[in-house]
Image 1 (cartoon, rainbow, N blue to C red):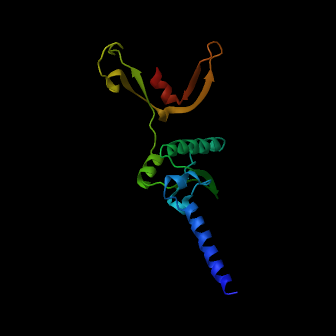
Image 2: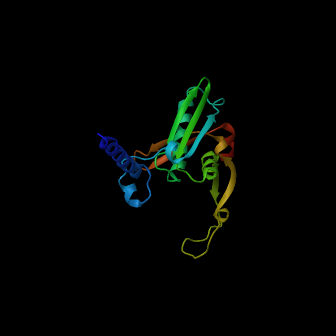
Image 3: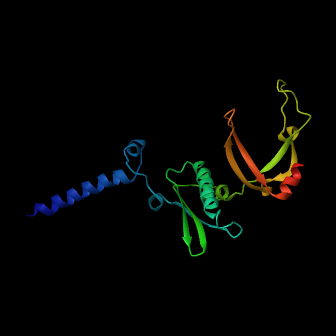
Length: 184
């Protein structure tokens, strides 16, 4: 009778050690045998909440804008090598939020900077003084392509298409009236 508590304590200690071996990865060998990935609550990381301003977007386009934004954020997160990032949209009354969870991320400030950076689209024209392709001259982008006043601000939409004769893929851009005036 006196041995039962001793066996129980030894068994409990062995089970605890075995569970600890699975939960705390200390070597490459133990990491190979984990059938699960540790989340934000176990390894730390960042929980970021972005509020999406849809005030200037028509109600018909709001779902497309939100899904497009979600796709862009997921693409940017993939640069960090986060094992299982969570990106989802949450609706709270009139507010639409994009929630990003990055488990195990070390440099939180870099992640915030990369995720929140606004892209800038600019159109350039091919310059007339371009060196021949077979020379060993190093050219700067500004030497080859001349800047224009046309930017992404003047793009209203884009559609992907395929030429029925050649089968080549192209992108058709539609611009605002002011953007069209730059093309003339």
